[in-house]
Amino acid sequence: MTDGRRRVPPTSRLAEFPKSAADQALWWERHILEVLHGLEPDAPRGTVPRPEFDPGRHSLAERERAKAAELTVSGHPVTASGVKQRRQRYQRDGLVGLADGRSAKQMPAFGRVAPAVVEAMQQAIAETGDASSRTIGFVVWRAKQLLVSREDGGRIEVPSDRTLYRLFDKLATGTHATGSATTRRSVHTRPSGPFGEVPASAPGELMQIDSTPLDVLVRLDDGIAEKVEMTAMVDIATRSITAAVLRPSTKAADASALLARSVTPETVRPGWSQALRMSRSVLPHRRLLSLDERLAHAAARPVIVPETIVCDHGKVFISHNFRASCRYLGITLQPTHKASPFEKGTIEKTLGSVATLFAQYVAGYTGRSTDRRGRGLENGRLWSLPELQDLLDEWIIAVWQTRPHDALRDPDAPKRAFSPNEKYAMLLESCGYVPAPLNGEDYVELLPERWQAINAYGIRIKHRTYDSHELNPLRRQHSGVAEKKGLWEIHHDPYDVSRIWVRDRRGGADRWITVFWKQLHRVGVPFGEMAWDHARAQVPGGTEEQIADAAAALLNRAHDGPGEEKARPSKRSRRDRRVAARTRATNTDRPIPDPHAAQPAHDDEADTDLAEVIPLGLFDPLANPWRRP
Image 1 (spheres, rainbow, N blue to C red):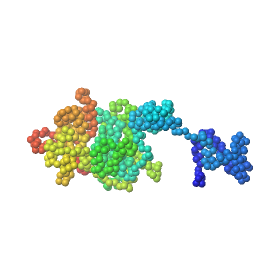
Image 2: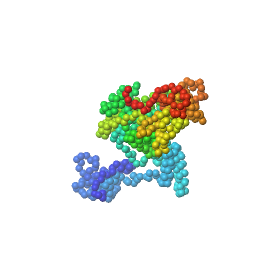
Image 3: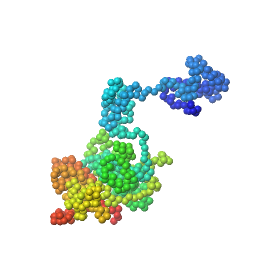
Image 4: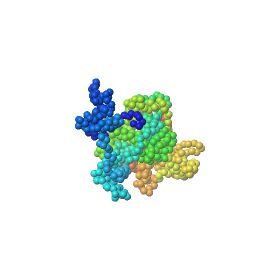
């Protein structure tokens, strides 16, 4: 050693040598140790060194000459210098120094294949990243094509197919080049460096949101069986699923509603076990109740106000409405890099766990792909969308929040795993709890917005006219918002087109004016824009009244049930039934508002004979839902 220090010899490297070379090294070790110390390594205790190898009587050179003479007589001719060299290598490299180094020479990683061939195969495998899955034969053919197209392709000898297939096996390890396309894309976008982790030490400090199809068929109205999408949000610090909603297709309003559910206590619903109450859980119920009275009848689910939400680039999460909702609640929205699902791996894993721990136990489970799907599922007993939503909410509280999570282990006792509720209760002691009460105005704030003028006839959105006597002072007036050219801020619910809300900032006030659809008296139930667009397509060039009648007829047929289907099969297509079912699924138990149509909208319509309006139940989003009667 150049620095004079003694190092530990790499004895484990002996495994790199063939067995014959390793046995020879062990044989030489016995003789070298006798030269150095006078005794073989397996000599019994108390054994006396042989006279010719006694270190007290002979020098090291004399012992080396004696060993060379002994081995030569026994049929292993060797010189004293040969013994000396092996002794020096042993003292320097240990047992590896006695092995024949020629037998441990490593072959090149790809044998005798030319580097240009390796580069061509690597490029052919890399091209499969975003392409459809193909066989190994195609990749080999593509590698040959790349070799031929090179400038020096004529001077490169193309190996045989057998050699190229072996080369593919070495280079394609872990790439899924001929396997699942989704897995291959995920591997292709995976960073080459080590994975990092953003620490979260408080509830709500970092949360993730995502949507995925739920592998369960639900029975929508009119007998349609379809899969639904689940949008969920998970807290990184506690692994709590703060909210999850099911919809036929996720909209920006659903993501905003998810925020509201995350920061609002979940009440115990009829039929739920009393063990699901917060007072029966490990959550610090009495301490929280002193801060937030809404928790008196709440379920055992943490109420968490997000600080930062990580999402992907789905149109639902990067929409202006969702961004505005986050700004309104003081939440930082952090989109990931495009095609980088690993940056929100917690919610991806959580949604997969929901499929494993919940969805597969539900009637109508379809499996994660068509090759895992059973037969005749749509004809079996399926849950409705509200029923499945209720089951999911109950499962989150009863199972997920009380189940020990592998990512919530105690650093001082790694064998102890906490449940999300236990972790929330522990962090609450150091982080505290700040209630975020939401009222009806907050609900309106979270709805999608648009900017329009208020005309003499009211407000028109997608061929629907909304009007109210409260708009009289605002008709054809400038809103005062110069950036929007005097247009008025309007919020609307895409799942219920019966009314809209107009922001009124006159006189320094900030209030919402509820404006109802003028043709609301023609429709018996609220419906969304999907049904309206479908009905308008069925009545091309029709008036607003005709389109409203068509939409009402579609929903009435859906409400009548499949019994009427046999009487008029030609009038109802599968598209009609699907639109009606998906629309009604998002309006379950939504009462119909009173449009106040008995009063004239403005002076121009004072002499107009209005039809009698039958008063119906009113859903007032501006009412305080927490006010006790």
